[in-house]
Amino acid sequence: MKKVFIINGGQKFAHSGGEFNKTVTSWTKEFLDKNGFEYRVTDINDEFVPEKEVENFKWADVIIYHTPIWWFQVPYRLKQYIDEVFNAGYNNGMYASDGRSRKNPAINYGKGGLMHGTKYMLTTSWNAPDTAFTLEGEFFNQTSVDDGVMYGFHRMNVFTGMENIPGFHFHDMEKAATSERIEAYHQLYLKHLEKQFE
Image 1: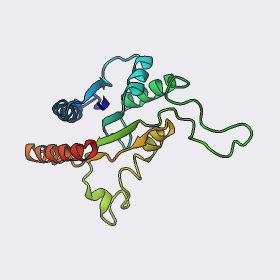
Image 2 (image 1 turned 180 degrees about the vertical axis):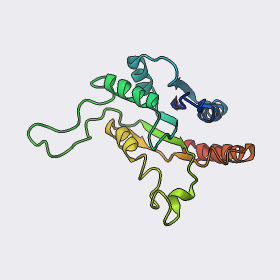
Image 3 (image 1 turned 45 degrees about the horizontal axis):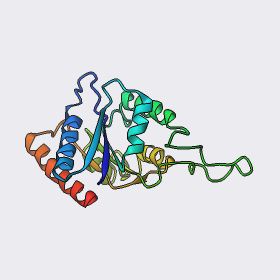
Image 4 (image 1 turned 120 degrees about the vertical axis):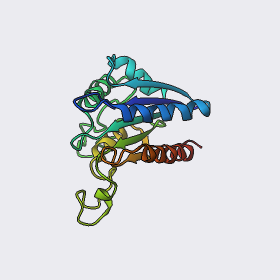
């Protein structure tokens, strides 16, 4: 049976209550319950013990990150979580080194991960519409979420040895966050999960 570790990065701050990512987390849990998966959930708003979180990473077959994007970055509480947990994972099941040797330090950077066989999936939520990434002359210069803003996030996970499975990005979630749009996204996301976890 697949074991899934869900990280809800929907931080409560200023006008954000983290509600949409809480909703996406609930959609994920419902899908996993329906299909007989085991799962664990961490909410980055709660206190955490880095060493215990490392055990969640080591336990899981798949890590699912749910995060909003604030100012083209993950929220600072999620970044703190990553910094502390990944640091605690050094020589503790997540990575052993940066992969290089002193004999030839110019090569093999990023190949010291210990999480081979583990997969991860990223979902993000944006105020930006999808057209900001796809149309010529728009803000992101036709660069996708994964190849642009979230490229470093993906490399961070690959550094540990994990393998990416296609994620899902929710766009225009402030100005166009109608109940109809959210329900349409709900159905699309469930279909995405079905495809990735079939």
